[in-house]
Every structure is written in C-alpha cells, then in structure tokens.
Image (tube, rainbow, N blue to C red):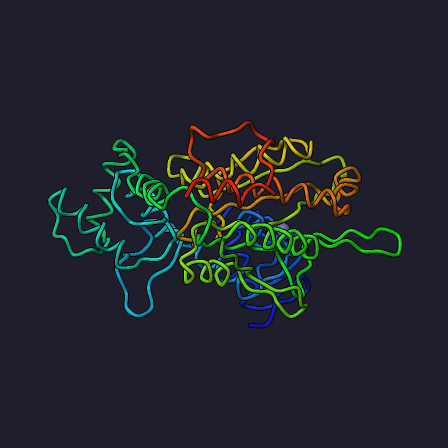
Length: 383
Ligand SMILES: [Zn+2]
C-alpha cells in the first residue's frame, strides 16, 4: 500500500481519522477527508503507543495496527476462522480477561487461534454454556458478569518460568535473538552533529554486533534480526516471527530514545505486560537485570522498567525485552553513546544480565561485578 501522509485526501484518510477519533487521539470534527497536521500528530501518538516508528505516516504496518485497534470487545462476534484468523484489539482484550481468570491462551497476541478457541470452550464449559469455542453475545455476557472479579494464578507465566528454569544454568547452546531497532530507510532518531549525523539505527546495529560477538564467545547461538545494509528493515511482526521460528530462548531489542526536550535523558527497559495483571514474569526479571546492570556500570539515569504491549514484546513467544539506552537528543547521553568504549560497557552490562538469567542463585554475585571475560570459565564450571 502507498504511504498515506500529511496533505493526502480521500476516503482512506477519512477511515484513518475515524479510527483515531475512536481511540481518543483526535478530537471529533474537522474535515474528515483531510490528513492535516492534527491527524499527523495523532498518528505519531498512535505509533508511539504501539512501539512503531513514530513518523506520522501510515504505511502497511501502521495500517494493520490501526485496523486491529478499531475493534472493541463486544462490537462483533469472535470465532476461530481458518485460514485467516480474526485479529484485533477485541481479541486481545478477550485473551487478557481469560488469562486473568486462569485460562491458557498463551500470549495475548490479538489473534483468535486454536489455543484461544480452546480456552473459550473451557470457559464456556465452566459457566454452563455450549462449548463451541466462539465468543458470541451469550459468552460475552458471561465474561462481562464475571468481569475482573475472578483473577487466577496467571498459569502461562508460571509455565514460562518453569520452561526457563528447566533449561539449566548454562549459556552454551542457548539461542538468543538480538534485534537492532529500525534499519533500512527508517533511521529512527536522527541527530545532526556538525558535519556528522548520528542515527539510532546505526548505533543500535553497532551495539547488536558487539553483543553478538560477546554472547557468541560465551557459547550462545546468536541471531540478528537485520543486517547493517540500508536495504534491511523488517517489520515488528517479521522480527517476532524470526525469533519464534528459531525457537529462541530470549530476545533483546536495542534502541536509543529521543525527545524534543534535550533535558530528557536516561535508560529504560521494557517487557511484555498489560499494566493491570498479565505480565511475563521472566521478561520482567530480564528487564530488571538489564536495567540494573546498565545503570550500575554506566551511570545513565535510571528511567526504570515498564510493562508494554508493543508488537515485538506481544508477538514473541519467549521472554523478550527492549532497552532504550539513553537519549540521542540529550547532549550528555549523546557524548556517551558516540564513544565506542561506552557502548562496550553497555554490551558488557547486557551480557552480565543474560548470564544472571541462568546463573544459579547461590553463586549470584553483586551487580556490576561479573567480568564477562570470565564467562566461559564460569559456564564451563557450571556444566
Ligand atoms: Zn527506536
């Protein structure tokens, strides 16, 4: 699809605007068919909320996200459709409710697949409805009645934790996907610096390549989601699929942040979570370790860890985190980021965090003190 952007007119613009109004990102009124400055701002805000590149233009990926966002739970009947499954915000809301009640839908990915249909059938059986695995008015009513009163033990996160623990305290042979953010025509945050030009895409790739070397040396199988070439720009979905297809044990996505205010600075790490209950506990643990190792080793301001439902975190089936290593728009953070020695420190911090994920608790050592050059020896001693 052609990119729809500021200055465009027509029915497609009207549809985009209607969805943004429904999301409370754009006020009612105005010329419905005009992609004006307010529409662009609203698209940016929407993209930011979904972890997409906030360029204010509607490409295929942004359109898919907008299309999925317009469905509110209860607005249509949901069922398992083969081969094209129903996708939408309403499916995700349904999955989150089921998860909170203790039904196994896997990850709330917004796709009505076989596992979701099974969980719905199980729910229907428990409330005395015909277990057809579809979510029509009756099932919707039953869900509404039970509401948030029933909150279970979030079994799928405990399962995730078990799988993780059972894989043993050893890095050798484990698979990790390292995801340098952006790429290709999408440079991410760009800051001119005299004759030079710093881009998030290049810095993220540099960090990823360094991380690949370190983790590879520790015996892990490491895959990058993209290359350095300007042609390489996979979508969030493609990145998640790559990690799923590889059966990766972990995914780490690398970004730097940017803000109009040059005073904004610091590091933040994100894991999958809805903010009201459903959280990947292993992802949260990894995010905590990455965050605290980076803060301890680099002195970047601690902007904490946060649960997000961004596509990359939501569609991956393994613990996944995204770290925004400082603000390229902050003169202070930028001075660090452009220094290869600083980037090496960041990479050491992430390697130490990954190591800690599988490190036996009794052998745990204080934050900031694992020497990654000794990793191989420690790994060999563990096994
Ligand atoms: Zn980014």
